[in-house]
Image (cartoon, rainbow, N blue to C red; front, side):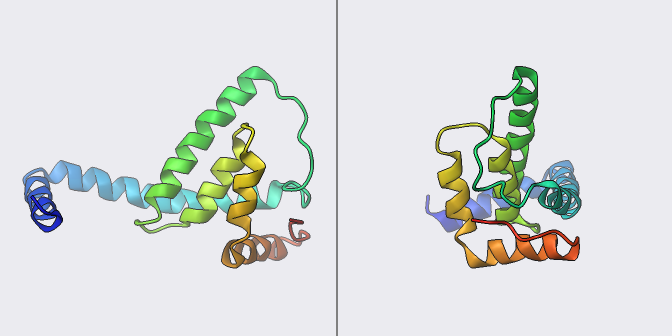
Length: 134
């Protein structure tokens, strides 16, 4: 079965289940609106040197909660790469919440995209905050 046949079969199966379409549509709208609200709030609250400074030790339950939120944001960001929303910014915020050895490498890789850094610093400028140092 080639991709075209697979896609046609999938669409045919989904058309027989309108609840799946409704759930997907509502989920997509909620993710879109949620990131439109959450990403700027997080972006403005982070210190300007967040991506260059060393972060101290964490409390276990706070780390677990941050990790759960991060996973949700990263998955939502990946979905938003094909759905409406701020995919790369949401992934960046999700990665920022995680604690793992290569975190700074991943953040810098995402921040090297001029459009991402320009968008983040634009949000911070509108809030009267200084731009991120990278």
